[in-house]
Length: 142
Length: 272
Image 1: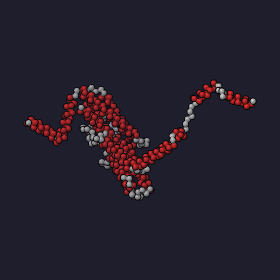
Image 2 (image 1 turned 180 degrees about the vertical axis):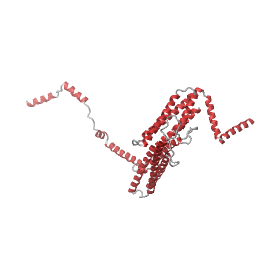
Image 3 (image 1 turned 180 degrees about the horizontal axis):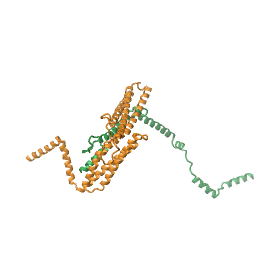
């Protein structure tokens, strides 16, 4: 009797269904639940195959190594010995020479014995005062 | 044929004239310019003259403003003759600016070519007589107190870096000790000379200024006859400008030596 009763009860369980409201709520919860944020580094590691990851790491180190070597070849004394680096010295010297000449030309132009206006085209390194005087000469003779 | 030879001879004669006599060439160019100007309508000439003069006056004012900015950037301690002179030079720059701006206003009212020409003449006379003398003093002041010191600071830093590098290379046994001693010693001497010349230039500039206060009155008012404020230096031919130029020439020489040293280091290390 007892066995029969148990079997009967178990067969009833097949037709057990959730409450309609509960079913709807549960479905909604599952469908609209936000995805947990992936952990970046582990996520990347997981998404890429091990071979690809190792390949990328090797490529990175090769790139860095080649960059360093290229820099050393390009400028052997830089950045450790900037003081005696020829390229940097030549650039600084060129810049200084140019500005020294420009400054001295400016003073020299106004220091002429006779401060007469220019009557010809300005020199290659014409300074502002020379340009002004040339403009006035042109205006006068036009 | 005779005609052709005649024209050819004339052309050859004129060409020869230009080659032999450059003045004739210049005169002929001026003449050509006049012909071009004659072909232009008077209204157009007037407009062009105004345009060129406006451009010149604006540039002249910008130039003076630039001078003033450079002067203001030079700092001195309070109540020093240097500061006093700097302030006087700033006032002078302001006077030039006032003159140019007044002429710009006047130019806007001119109606005839004769009026423009008169205005241009006034500007030319002012620039030749008053501006050139005063602006030269401003530029000399900037040269002595601003530009030359800034170049010397750069040279000092470079010298220091070179000495550090040479010492380190010697420490690493990459170069023989004392290989660069003569070069660096020479560089030190040249740099010191450049500094000394700059100091002398500054001293002389101030001596001249103090002497000018005893001889000449205050700076002349605007548009009066130009009176040279600068007093003749003690040593004939030696001026602050000359000393500053000599100082800068030493700096140029110094950099040649620096480049030579850099090249030698490269050769020693087998880089070059």
